[in-house]
Amino acid sequence: MNKFLTLTLCLPLLPLLALGQGQSVAVVYNSKLAPSKIIAEHYAKQRSVPPNNLIGLPLSDGHTIRRAEFTSTLEQPLAKALAKRKLLDGRKGSIRYLVLCWGVPFRVNKDASLKAPAGTPTQLSRNEASVDSELALLPQLGQAIKRTGYIANPVFNATNPKTISPAKGVLMVARLDGPSADLANSLVDRAIDAEKFGLWGRSYIDLRGIKTGSFKAGDDRLRMVGEITRRSGYTTVVDENPGTFPVGFPGDRIAFYAGWYGINVEGLFAEEVVDFAPGAIAYHLHSYNGSMIRHAHSRWIGPFINKGATATFGSVFEPYLELTPYQPVFFARLIQDGFTFAEAGYAATRALSWQTVFVGDPLYRPFGKDPEQVETELVNSKSSNIEWFRLLAVNQGLASGAPPAAAAEHLEQLEETAGSAVLQEKLGELFAALGQADKARAAFTKASKLSTSPKQKQRIKTALESLKR
Image 1: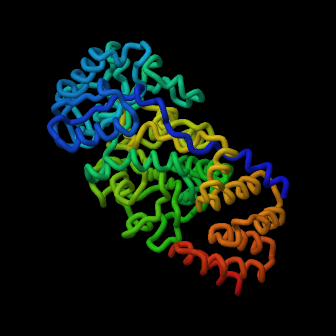
Image 2: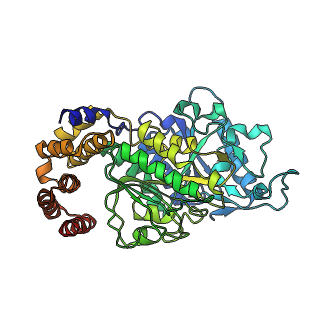
């Protein structure tokens, strides 16, 4: 028991509001669209962004923009506005983040008049890109940026978040976007709620079962993500089947999702209701997962936002597997190192002037508070989330090598266990693993009676049936 009590002090850093960072953000909106300005003003209020940092530009209302139009109506006017307001000059008060609001285009179309330098590989002789990835290079705008292929991100794999800044040539760009203006407007509220109350739930990793070949790297990445969430204390489900999680899969309280490879949302995530945890971060690896952000039922980013995810990311055109964000770095920086959503995203991104978009509040920082303080706040407020805190501690103890019998004993002694479907289910799993079928059956039965989640009840039913065999 003592080992588990000690391990509660070794949990990943937990919620801390992104206080005092509003001055490091500039917010861009489409001045032709009233909802775009409303989103900008709401974000500024919620994150204390100074009025000087809100910039309205008259832009196309489509999601795709021509290269020449991007340059003349967005990139150059924005660079001038930032310079005039002294927001990107390296002095105190300079920004690190750029928020693009719903209504700002997110794709720059291919310009056939731009020719790649001789010797450029065919697959990189392209200039279509995400608006966001192009604007990330604003600090380098005076350095004759090439517009074909990609530009290596100078802060890829950064371990110190402060180094991800214009001083290093990078502006962290994310957008408040989605299938509707209202959904886009809600993203900062979702983030702040999770920062206040915690990101609690389970992790679901959907592999394809690839054992050989070039695409094995995709499975390898996602498997590493599963190991990061497991060691961080999240109950982690890793699926090796070739298909995506099917309709009816018992996925509940989804805090993290990472998987691949369907072009349009399907299976579990196409169900009418998806049980995303407050603050959930979801990522589905596909070449065009971000090409239709404003569609509720097409590709993946739009549907994720529509169903309740707080942050997600993807590609607007073909990025090639090796140039998609490196997911293990993203999840490690976010969960283990306490980076903000945008810091984790840009630390994980190899390529700029390329295809990536990050959708969600860039300041979203779900991890950062001392675990002892979190425990005290949960206990004093009588929050039901204490059960997730206890589960996280037990899971982390098990991941560190503590015996299942010790974990079961610890759970039985916790006062929260008796009334918690979450902890009773875990107790059932532990007893089942120990070969104590009667105790497992009793714990699972109690968990089912306590549960209000149809997905959890479904999972427990399967566990009880397995005990009969």
